[in-house]
Amino acid sequence: MVALDETGPTTMKGNFLIRTAGYWTSAGDAIAIVDAPSDQSSGMNDAFRLSEAHAQDLHAVVATLRQRFPGAKIALVGTSRGTISVGNVLQREPHLADAYVLTSPVTIAARGERGLSGMHWDLGATPVLVVSNENDACRVSPFNAARALAEDSRLQFLAVSSSERGGARANECGAKAPHGFLGIETQVLSAVSRWLAGPGSVGTPPH
Image (cartoon, rainbow, N blue to C red; front, side, top):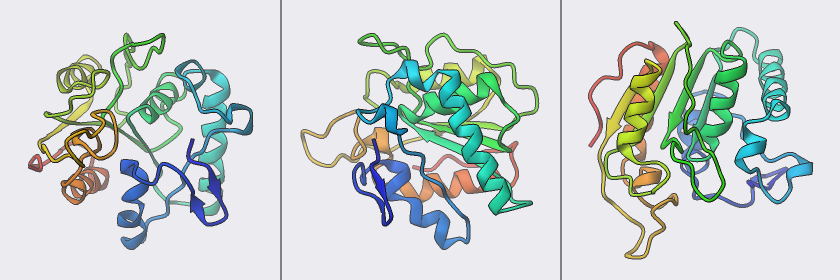
C-alpha cells in the first residue's frame, strides 16, 4: 500500500516506480500513482489484483487521465506485484491504454498467490514491454520466467544487468536490489522512454 496523501506517497518510497517518478515529471510527463482502494486498506492480494473490480478501478483512472490530458499517450506501468494489476487489464481490456510496461514481473505462484503464472495474452498490435534484470534473485520474478512470459505472448523484452544491492542483507524481492534496478534506474527508464516513443525496438540493453 502506497498510502497517498495530499503530498504524495507516505510509504513504499523506495519502490522503483515511486522513487524514479521525478524522471518523468522532469521530462514534462504527467504521472498517476495508483494506491489500494479503501476496502483493501491492508494491501492488495493477487486475487484482488486479478479481479474485475480492480480492472474497473484502473479503467476509471485512465478515463480521468484522458479527460485531464486530452490527446496524451497513456501507458500503464507496473513493477513487481504491480505487474499483476497491469496484466489483469491486458487480459480484460487491452486497448484501455496506449502502451503497457511490466518491470520485474511476478511470474511464479507462491504462498497461495498466483501472480502472472499461467497467464497468456493474445494482444496483436497492443504495445507491451517486459523488463527484467538478469540478476533478479527474487524467487517469484526470475529473469528466465520473465523472458518466457514475453516470448509466449509475443511481447517486447528488454534484458538488463546489474548486481548492486542496498546492503549485504538486502531483500532480493525489494527495491534496493537487482529486482528494483538499483544503480541502473536512469538507464532503464531511458530505454523505456525510447520504447514508448516508438514501440517496436528496445535498443541496446543497459548494463
